[in-house]
Image (cartoon, rainbow, N blue to C red; front, side, top):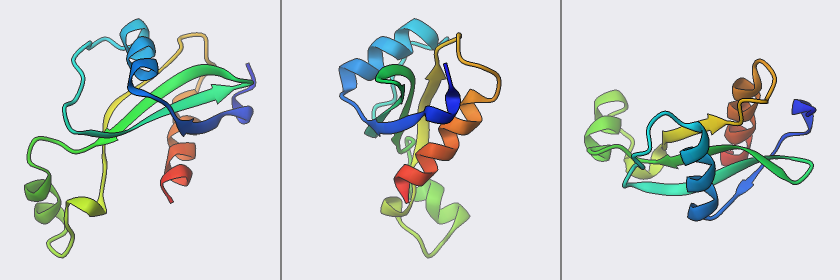
Length: 102
C-alpha cells in the first residue's frame, strides 16, 4: 500500500473499535473521546486514532499552559495501524491528523 495516499476522516466508534481490538495491545478504550479518526488508503481502513481528554483535562492543560482551557487541546487516546503498513506509517498518519485538526 502506498502510504503517501493516506487520507484521514472521521469514522464511527464501532469502526474504530474493530481495528483497535484487532491491532492494539490494550483493549481498554478511553472514556473521554471526542473524535474517532480513520486512516484510509484507497478506501481501506488501515489506521485509527482517537482524540479526547485525560482524566483531569482542565488540570492537565492549566499545568502546561495556564491561559488555556480544555477546549484548546486533545490527547491521543488510542493510535494503531495495520501491521502490514510500511515503516514510518504512524508518523505520516500523525502528521495527517494534525492537518485534519487545523
